[in-house]
Structure formats: C-alpha cells, structure tokens
Length: 158
Image (cartoon, rainbow, N blue to C red; front, side, top):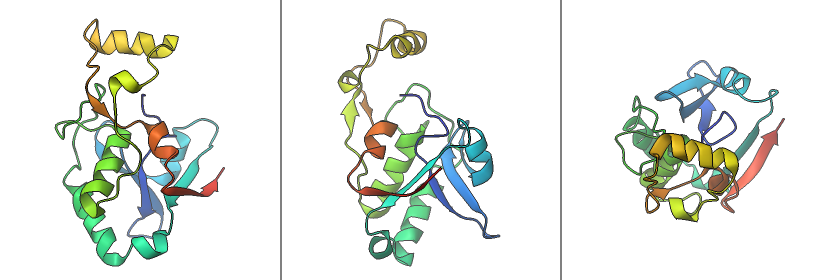
C-alpha cells in the first residue's frame, strides 16, 4: 500500500497558471506537476477527476476543498498508515479532503486485514514497519481503491 508518484494527489493550476500537485510525500505539500511526474516511472501518469466535475466542483466547492486541505498542510508523511490527522499518507489526504470538504467519499474505506498482505514485498514491508504487531483493525484507504472508484473518470494519461 505504499504511495508512489503514481498514486493519489490533487492537481490544480498554480498562481502562475502552471499545474501543481498537492500530496503527501515527506510532508503534505505542493509540488510542481512536472517534478511530480519525474518522480514516477518513465514519465507515465494518469489524471482522474470526479465524474461530472463541471457540475460538482463549483467555486464554492473548490474553496471548501482548499480549506479542508489547508488544515492538513505541512503534516508529516505517515508510513504506518494510521487513520488520524497526526500524520497523513497520500490516499488518506485526498480521501479526507473530499470527504471533509464536500462530503464525497472517493473509494471504500477498508481495514488492514482486508488488504492483500500475502505478496512477498508487502509481507516484508509490513514486518519492517510493524514487526509482529500488524494493526489489522486499522482503517485505511488504498490508492488502488481510490483509483478504481466509480466516482472518477480518466481525463488524460501518458
């Protein structure tokens, strides 16, 4: 479930008109879109947006989203994937911004126990992070769960 430059973030145009991404990396911060893409694999990316965004994302709704996001700005990255606001991971950031800002839940919340924890890479990471005390009842939102949400449509991909 680790985040990568391919996972969830919120992109928008900056004050100078160039796009940027609001996401959780080391901290919750703004990153120029070009720099965000460079962190990924081979310059590939997918941009997804709310279905009917033109109707839903009114100027009032966008202001509410910005307010919800501003409350999380500067929070450290959460490599333990805890469902709190003390630290924030990538998909948690976007989920909470949409939920708190305009009441839209992008993706289904799960428990750690619901995730595929048997892949060797996942097992190794879980052992590194938690030892033998994996928080199986912790609430999580995975990037994959958000990405596959029926509420989103693909706008562009490269």
